[in-house]
Length: 526
Image (cartoon, rainbow, N blue to C red; front, side):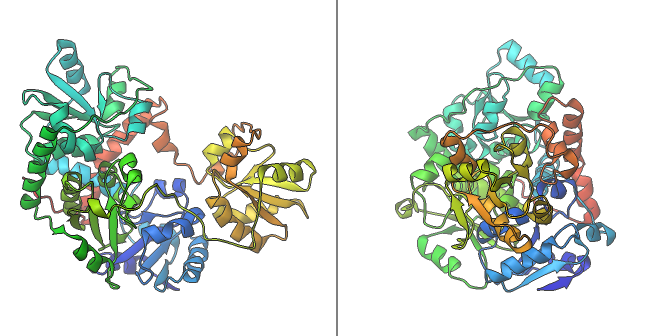
């Protein structure tokens, strides 16, 4: 491990060689201030996620923290896993701004900034909430499509809208709006997916009038209109005619945007290259992915991949190979945006016969044979006897809502604070929703505490399934200690009008920040 200056990292990000720039702070810390090209990978989940984010262990990797030594601890963990080119940025996040480099607020900022650049560069048509309400009142020939995930749609949606995630729009538009005279209105919660969804359809050359809803559901509510809650987001089927139209549009887009097609042999060549990182991402909805996918592929729904590319790809300069059910439609529409973001992207053709792996995956911690895993009943007995204490190392929002009886809260980067609260001789039983965060935090706690350390087998999920009691802990931990929670992002959906206005203004201000830092995207107009 070596220490490097912020200015050196800034130069590395522009030198054309692969680099993973990782922010190992917790979500609240990261979301308040960070460099544009840093990717959030918290220390609390480091070993479980790093193999997906940075699969090639020789990748040049830089870690950023709060100047509190967490990056040094993280570097040691990565070295133990075989990562050979790990560096720590001196001075932590404060050193970036201190060097005169641009600092950004928010999450998924590269993708959010890209959405704003698309609107400016393509002059994407848009309408205000008041105009949409008037169109609905007049009974105009129109359809409202919500480009977010089905889960987000269920939480809140525009009345009359239907859930069609952005990655599915071109694939399903013929069956949603078969009449070319139908106006298609695309919305999300704010701006990015409204813009990207509408422009995707325009780039695909569909004959309908397509517009983005300015400000999405937030602007709709701020304008005084009601949202619907609890509606299911169910995707409509794709007809033969719909697939034919979508396939023709995708073929034209591949030609227009010079998107290379790969076959299985070419994919193997890329993945076997020891000098480059290759991400293989399946852009279909979760149910399709779980039913059958290529071995080693990760699930990355196309609309979300464009919206939040940094949640899947942490190595700048890496290759991305996209795959769908074999038609190439959804892979193509996603790829044409990733290429304009600056990624080296490919579409995998004819891969349906290779989709031999089933199910979905979630992060798991490395095995630790020395760590005791206590079943709920055994854990309850120890706690009831005063010989153990529950320690919640999950996100603080979950602790406040339903902690195990008497549990204290803490997070891995501040493990010393947990150790300080443990009575002598008492076993610390760590738990999280499943086991991953608990297993990782247990590594650190065992190093700094003389107490016996165990985890709750199956986590809080198993505890509740076994009938274990939970209790609310409002106000605990206090807000000042919740470094894992980004308040201003969450408050915009909780009826806080000013937070919603501030969020929309933040998105609109991103192009000015890009200009100050000299960042730009290679937009290719149709």
